[in-house]
Image (cartoon, rainbow, N blue to C red; front, side):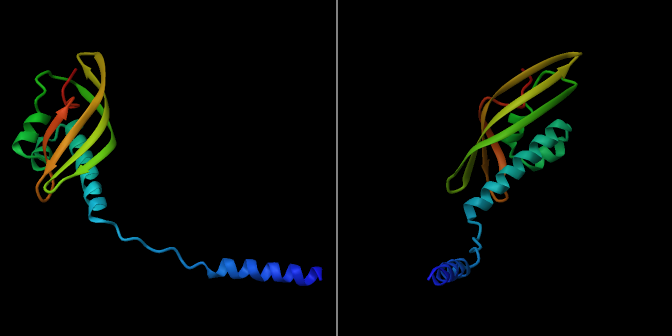
Length: 141
């Protein structure tokens, strides 16, 4: 009797394991693709700012966005920026990316650190940075 119960249990377990199909492959939604594009654009702008690559910044932003990024009037020797995305809000033609950021600036042998939260507003096709709301991470503290 025990052998039959054991055999029955093994058969039920095997049937349960083999009845489960393969994982369903989910197609990425348009919102997901847009969010990935926003993350990539933000990293492109951050890298270009660190390298002082104004041409890449200009291609990645509108005139208003370019002015926001290059609004820094103080000179500096080097900068480290880190962005941590927190929230993406997608409207018809506008995408807003909320990020927390940290910066470390070096100027004339002195170091300064700053942090804050910014909202990057992006518009158009392909997306371009059109403005920065809240605390601008590209301005020397």
